[in-house]
Image (cartoon, rainbow, N blue to C red):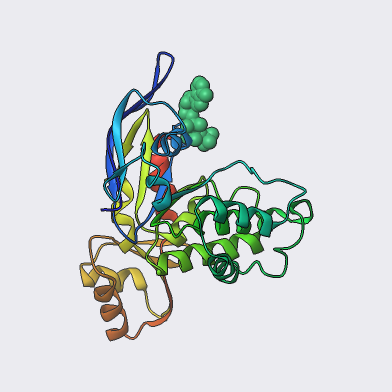
Amino acid sequence: MVLRVKQLTKKYKNKTVLKDISFSVNAGEIIGLVGPNGAGKSTLMRSILALEAIENGTITVNDIANNQPDFYKYISFLPSDNYLYMSLTGYDHLSFVANIYNLEKTEIEETIDLIGIRSYVNQPIKSYSYGMRQHLLIALSILTKPIIILMDEPFNGLDPTSIIELKQLIRTLHSQGISIFISTHNLDILEDLTQTIWFIKDGELFTNSPVDTMSTSYEIAFFYQGNIEELMKDSYLPFKMNDSLLMTNSAHSIEKYLEWLIKNGVQIQSVNRSKRNLEDAYRHFYDV
Ligand SMILES: Nc1ncnc2c1ncn2[C@@H]1O[C@H](COP(=O)(O)OP(=O)(O)OP(=O)(O)O)[C@@H](O)[C@H]1O
């Protein structure tokens, strides 16, 4: 167990924004947090980091509570707002954090290479693009070798190139065993990164969200000279047709569908996990 949150309640004046929320994040998980504007995503992250005073709850990382300095060695935060100093360089920022945590120069160098910011790390922040700033913020957030990173809307304002790079970076961090808790409004990006997606609604967190079944639903593009619907009926496997794609049903394994189709002379052109599932689940859950 990396992060554990127990019975967290947070109010702003009379309004309860987070209602008795409990959950845990395991090592190496990528968790997506979804919810409409004002649902409480940022408040949840800020409360975990004790940036907000809370009414009730305990929050630990590696069993260390968030009122202990060591807590902040193991967890780091990529906030949605940019807090960089325009006249200082990327390296200045990294040295600043390294000094606080008593880190070696070599650790700064390793981080620069891992995040791939060497070509501009000695330039002042004011010359950085939005994506370059985001990379530096990530470099800052991993400098202390955290075991979990909270990312609040990290894709906001990024162009497609930076989005692709950031997704790759998140995968790299994940491959190193770092857990990532990420809030975003971009459902497509989230679906690309993880199948563990939690919903927040009216101050409650739904960790067994309606998206749980989505991972096993697929779209199959195929070539077949006969009538595919007739052929599928004979298989007794539930399906839907969508823009001439065959949509599988999540309760049945993809292998069963492929086996049946191939056996009956259908040429498979591609198989993709259905992208529409998260959006559908979102619409259904939030009644959009
Ligand atoms: N400092 C504050 N004082 C009073 N109310 C606040 C404060 N910060 C947030 N709120 C309220 O708490 C609720 C949750 O806000 P929060 O920013 O956590 O939502 P969010 O899910 O991150 O939204 P968004 O997707 O728009 O970023 C909202 O109703 C918001 O108005």
